[in-house]
Length: 483
Image 1: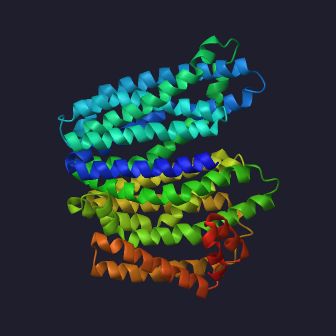
Image 2 (image 1 turned 135 degrees about the horizontal axis):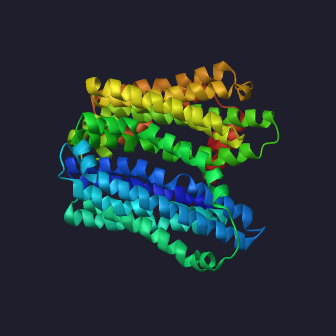
Image 3 (image 1 turned 90 degrees about the horizontal axis):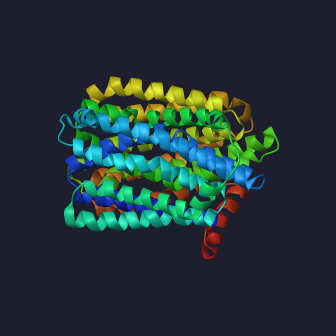
């Protein structure tokens, strides 16, 4: 877990460096086209993978100790399935490249870029499955290295090349390098075992397991991409670039706060022996969301202009600040939805997770088509916010059995107040000055006011302080007792 946690932080930082380089060194129009390619590839790649990356991790872990030969036969067949689906999806994608360019850019000028991204699409599902193999082998340190080192090579190549050429094709080539390294590295380690393994393993067993996973994955990617697709179709590539930049900045909240929570939550809930244990785990997760995710999201909302300028070159990208502010204001619902989805996975109620997915897809597509033509980027952000709210409410309904032992309502009310007071102060300061240099002092002011509110409202209990003392360095652990 230590290796994976460090890798998650490292790759997140590298990902932000890559995005900052793109936003600063590539013209807005080209970044908009890159955003369109990313959206199209996200959907196509999920269809090609179809849950096979999760299947390979399961079968390798399950069969290694029972019958190692059989596990490698399963891996080989999963790769065959992935290769077949990837070839088909890539062929369809390449055939649609002129139409994708016409839809997103209102012309066929960028068809060649969509064609070039076909190589990226071909390698993406295979690299995901390769990482699944290493995960199934439980070689977590190797998995961390294979996730981090290719990303480092990719970012170094991309930044150096973008400085020299300032061309969006560099970003596509960088992703090809990243995925290619992962595939080559994995095949070097496991290729001989796969080719020499003998035994039987039915394709039907693989498809039976992977079909609901693949369906859920497609639902999820459509739910997260519908607003981007509609923005690209109704507006233009420049507007898509501005909106995507706002989404990239908002992804900080997921990378730094929600992902670590859900990584720990799934195994803890899965290993719980009773409904009471699961209810307590859910209570602690929601408590974490109100104490950390909520104030962090409101801080991002208050400093949306400064964060957009930090990530981009400012200018036209600042038009995405209202969208970022709106998304960040309601990000708590996204965190709650993620927590509840993990709950359903942990207790084996995947049908509930799929129903939540269908509800969010319908919301995103419907509201995006309704609001984007009239409200533009703010309409797209409103649709994105609605997805989080609907997903959280539908998930709350199905999870009500495990919501009987939550903290008192007063805790959530005081948590909201403790976050809203510094938000109001910082937002007022931001209206006075939105210069990038104000980012650090405004953040310090926000944190100090928030901690003061937490202490005054007596928001923390003994388990909160114990948790805080564990994550702080030794020389700062005594601070937990004074909050």
